[in-house]
Amino acid sequence: MNRMLMSLGTATLMAISIASASAKDKQSETFLKKAIEGNFAEVSMGELAQQNGQSDAVKSFGRMLSTDHAAANQKALNAAQALGMNSPGG
Image (tube, rainbow, N blue to C red; front, side, top):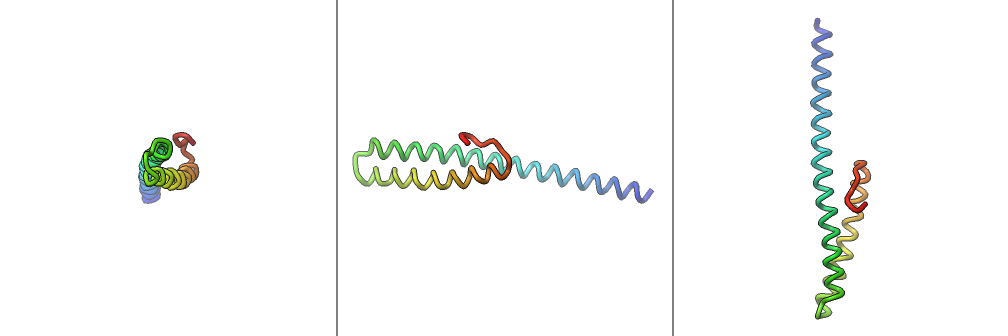
């Protein structure tokens, strides 16, 4: 009887752990998806600033925006791949 209760308790703990890990992965996937989408938007805005900016300062800011967010996006895409998720645009 004690073994059966111990096995049941162990199985319950394992199920809770798996559910918890799955929820964390889901939160990670949601965060990464939003981060990747946001980075793609920032890169696009940076490109528009470079093309349509009226001043060198705006064009320079657009270049920095595109460069920085492209680098951040590469890191986010690598993290998404490590989680085994299909990332937007990746």
